Length: 176
Image 1 (cartoon, rainbow, N blue to C red):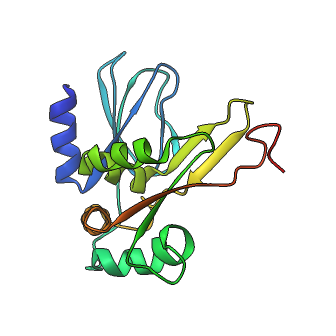
Image 2: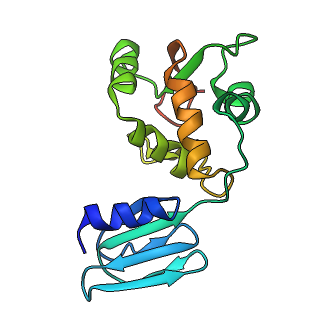
């Protein structure tokens, strides 16, 4: 099974591909999985361990409710995290301390829509230089359909973008 064939199959099902490394074969939710060690293709109905092997999962998303990108942004993104004060017509890209804001903004705008869709679907996680786990954005694959994720990304990418440094406790010795 090639990545391209699996990706096409996943897109037909309204899902996103999540790849796994050796012994990291857990799936995010209902969908289809392929494990390369034994070339097994299996359906799964819940979060679980697929198998101990590299492969791919097709994470199926909910049914499209028809919400617009703007409606999703206004209810789930702008008011809580990415809106700039009372101005919800601008998108704030939050970055970790020490990041060059101009470079972060340029990199954000240069990424493909699929890259941004994957961020919305699966969320964003990292680890500080000191080893502190950091969750910077929750996943939305259980809340929105693929088409809704596509619409909100299209809406965001059409907005003016500002980059700002977030407060991250434990990021460095100088952080309160």
